Length: 297
Image (cartoon, rainbow, N blue to C red):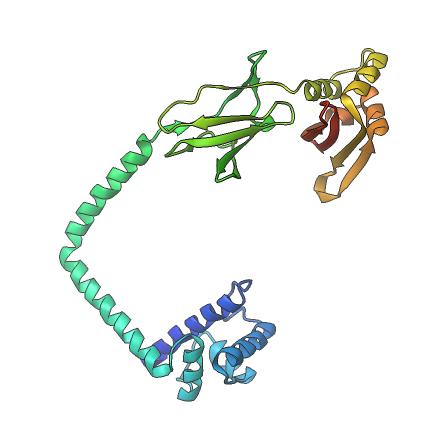
């Protein structure tokens, strides 16, 4: 490599070092702003105890192509900034790396066919292992009615060292390679914990319904028949301290309802009520519903 090519490598290393100090920067020298230049000057001063001018950066670092090599004292400063003792060490290490790469290239040319052959065999083995791994699929049903439960109504979490990580049930399958504890949660069904074993099919998981949540869901989706009866039933299942948050679309915020306001909305249902979906539900010790979070379907 020529000295100018090594300088291009040094520019790349400087940019990487700058990104270590300012992780939010994810650009190139072309997109390097005036504020980035000021930040770089401060960072170089902090690390090397030497200074570099804004004009020098515009002249030598910002351009994509350089016509000549800058002064060695400036190259030394940048080399120290990227962790070397100076420009000579930067070039020396670069030559060692290039020589190793050339050696590897010559070596690989001699044994390339064998490497390719064994590589294909190994890749084929791992592909076979992956394809033969049992894919697990979670399906749910109501433990009483035996009706299937939509995946949108259930959230599943893998539990590892007491940490819960949610599983995307919208993807049809997922793979495991060890016994895995999974917690199932839903606004309409009681929580349940299951253990999934590798290479063993999962039977359809039965969930016990949350009676009060199911009743409220039915009220919200059905047409009114006997509003007096519905009012009495709502009084029974809703806490006096009920809080209801209706999340508005397009991140416009939320609407708040207390028990009286929400009960009135449910007693006299409208088309907008039927579009609401329960996404979070909390209950008191007596099972009365104390909190609801709703979104619009």
